[in-house]
Image (tube, rainbow, N blue to C red; front, top):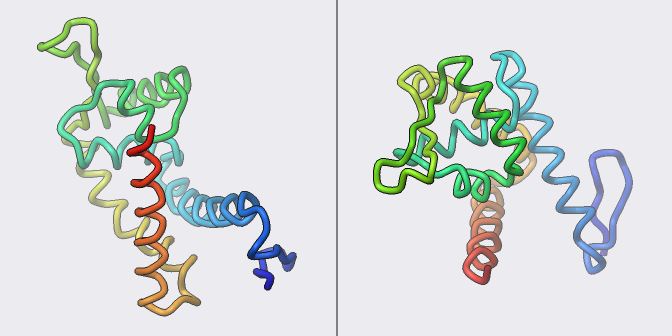
Length: 152
């Protein structure tokens, strides 16, 4: 059995899955980046903004792990968000050795504005799937990620 890719190539479904997963990631990223670019936001910035939208504050190490952004890149991304008044950092009052990242009011507003565009981009990618297939894809991906994050 083979899966057809966006470029017309096919991959064996029962073979190594890294190419298929990479293609799917690239497909989602490309559609989302197009929407974000119109608003001057990068995909890495969006990852940080959306994570902070769901969390009151985040230590930088936790933010790096949650967004899959390396420490030096994350520092640069957060600096850019601070320069745009979308985020800010403060020392953790409970542990002065840690720095916490926060979403500003303006950042929260930008996330609310962009969320519908992100959902549209994701819907474009999955438009050829039935609603049931789309929900199953998300369920399986969430299960995969959760199952592996518990083991690390």
